[in-house]
Length: 557
Image 1 (cartoon, one colour):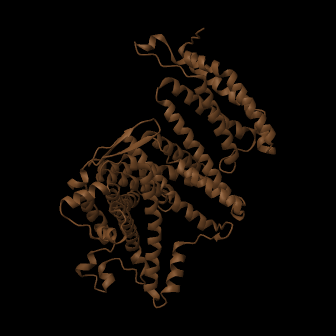
Image 2: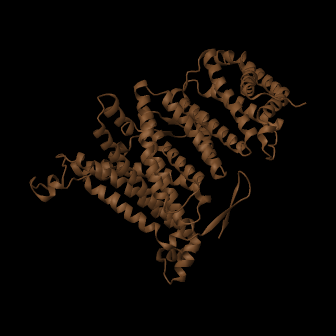
């Protein structure tokens, strides 16, 4: 028997069916789970939900068919295959699993206390589950995105729960729980970069970042919440402009661009997590040792005072500042390199590809940093637009300065890293070309002759190390040059102030900040443009063959 529904009542009936079934399974047990942590009640609730899902899966299937399949709308197209009970049951159980995971991991992240909080959360997941079922019935490829959205949501809930346990519970004092925490966090982090196609990876990371953004916004103070939202909108404009500018060198699939941008945003997590560990004073207790995170400036100070006793005064302060910025550069550039390697390696076919997509990673990093760091775009919105009368001149000046100068620092350092990673990735073809031209890679050939290691392996390690060292140096040097005038006792603003000349001299018209600006903006543009237009960097050196929805194989050219 085929059930047909009019258009107006179809959406209403679908929404009612979506809402009532999971709500009925949870209405009795949720309050007891929240208040008494009754595991038996939770188990009974779960079994009841499974049984009800099995019984009503066929009914759901008929309702969805009636909603989305109308002969007058077919227009001669091939009819969409109906959802199987297995697909419907998978969505229902997946929605229930995410709901249960959220109840047990987000108690301190979101206001879930009491029956109304649990029912509100349940309604949210019920609507999401119904939308997933509707999308799977309507669109052929929707099941891939539903799968990716579920993975991203589950990982966001899990990592938020772990973060709450680390900073609000007694996790740090228990070595067993601490080891389990590290293992779970590492596995969850690796799952974010699973072996899937570009659009699946991008959906996983995008969903994960969406929920992290919701979490940050909900937990902000009311006066900061609006400032952060406006800062996100403002920061998105230069990010899109930068991406458009560098994408003109070589066309890329939008799914790959989104993937690398999201990966760049996610690469801010290590430095932000470490910073929170330092500010919270958390100590990580393991079985045979204890880790006490310290401020990079303090670490540099201890190193200089303990190993370089002859350096004191201003020289000591300058060296400590430079070392602390280099430490920050190591964390940030290694994080960007890791996500670039895990997310993009299978999509690279030329050195230009590696450079271009590494720059997209850098832009994503700068975008997230501008929003999350309270002293950047969020602070500009608060200081110039919200707390006082709107001062558009000061606001736009600060935004433009950061959007151009500091974004270019990330682009140059990570772009250079991408170039050397491209050489490492295509080491075999590159070495063969160099040898055909009669050139010699002296260091590679020397180590190969002495140690008998494969030349390709030596060259790869060499290029990765050189790329990382240059990226860290370029990153740390810029931060040092920008901070340099504030470190000196006289706080010079121009070259004349630095060298003790009169204000009427020619050097008094050259601000100190102009030096790093010209070096990174003008010099960076020239360097990257030159690398992009080199013919050997444009050569296609490999291609991908996709063999399955979620699995890719690399074919070496």
